[in-house]
Length: 110
Image (cartoon, rainbow, N blue to C red):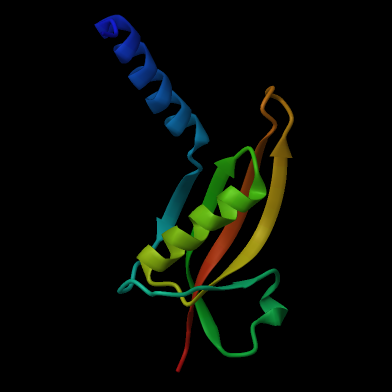
């Protein structure tokens, strides 16, 4: 039988690793009913239809792919039809080289 201390240590270690692995997203703006898909653009000029920007999000993590996935999830929850990636940055001040991705959330105008 395993010691309760070992089981608690393993449980705490798993929780800490999970929390470290999560990207965080800060959001400011309005919200609409949730959407099921989100288009991704890298400039306003790529969007071929009229749209309005209704919010801005910034995601942080050690890799860009995880941040963009989290931004897409946030955009769906806020009702965006698409996001426009407006900035990518790397903070080399810390050991993990935290990356930052900024995006505008947009709604297509009918």
